[in-house]
Length: 81
Image (cartoon, rainbow, N blue to C red):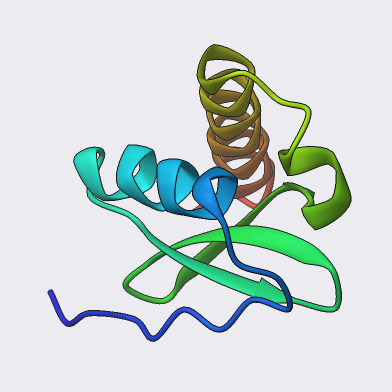
């Protein structure tokens, strides 16, 4: 898997921790339009707003990732793929 370039409008421990959590689970990160997305292959999942990241605990961030994965799976199943 190729590394994704992470370009976020602000940098700090919050973004670094989120990126590490995603990488541990096989995802990359992109931050666009003030939103944090988990990326893997052609898949891109919206996790949270960048502004909310600073106040999130790691467990809440991972819960948001799990919710995004579940929504993505539900969408794929509803499309009959």
